[in-house]
Amino acid sequence: MKFRNILEAVKVCDCVDSFAFHNGKSSTLDFSFVIDGKLVGYILNQYVNDLETYTVPKSDTESQDLHLFTVNHESCTVEIQSWCSTTESRQKNFELMLAKFKNENRWPLLKNWRDEPYPVYGSEQDPSGVYFTVERGSVQAFGVRSYGVHVNGYTIERNNGVECIKMWIAKRSMSKGTYPGLLDQVVAGGITAFERPTATVIRECYEEAGIPEEISARAKPIGTIQYFMKTSFGYQPETQYVYDLELPPMPTGSVDIENHKYFVPKAIDGEVDSFMLLDLDEIYKRMLNGEFKPNCLVVVVDFMIRYGYITPENEPDYLEIIESIHRSLPFPGPKSL
Image (cartoon, rainbow, N blue to C red; front, side, top):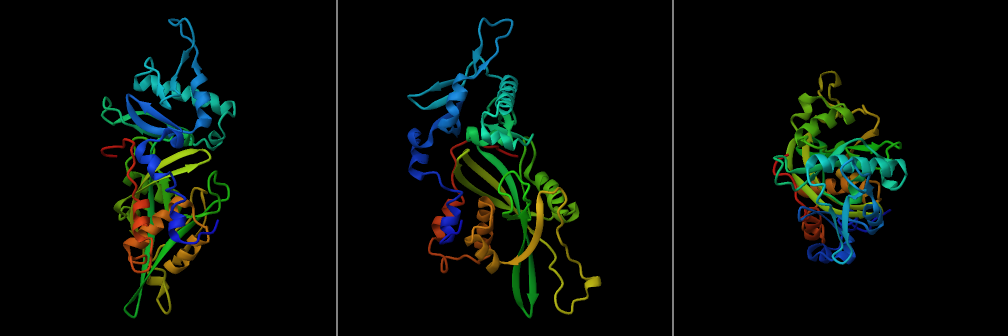
């Protein structure tokens, strides 16, 4: 999909209607997912019947099967039943339910099962703030906020006093379950339950690009981007922790390659097809050409703004772009990851 401008490309990620979002219009946002009175996500109508009719087999102390959820069609809310109120019981019953739906091929998004636990935040009882965790592949079904890290691997070439910034860009493997073949950051990945962002960066740097810890440890946290995306699978409110990692430039001209220190990323875990070192003009063209994974495009746009490539003078939608990539989300998050 080609884009007429950068704002149109950014809006692929930030596409939930702002008025409905801020005013809680259930008719637009389907059903609210509420735990202990707190809004933690939005659920598409297509999942509600399965949740409403799902029952947990009765135990020795129960006279009948138990419904796991209460669905209120007037207020458009889905809540976990009061009998399932502990972290342990919620964890167990969500795992059983999702495994059942996966085995029955009930929800198409579960075909992308990852065996990675993602946290649902909001608990005031647990010191971690986590109510329970859910399978990563199911997150969109419940519309809960998810978290990841993106690393901008870049170089600065200096020739005759002129600086040229380039970025290492990864091309995703065609075997990837999501967005195969599209362009990505040199390193990016989801933050699983109870893992800290910087630990995720160091792990993913080696797994995806062969970047050793002595280099990845220099990655600088520069903030976050946030957006509220909606796909056919569900809602995706996401927070991405962004890191910048300056890498040694490739040798040019008459540089002594033998003694020139530079780094070339290499695929380790099979999730990347190849890496390219591109200047910002080329990257900008490829973004408009629709070659980037949507949220990776947003991270690159943020980088271009911070490094003065996209400015108020050359981008008429400058303010709206900034607002769209730094959305306020109504769902609880971690106090410290």
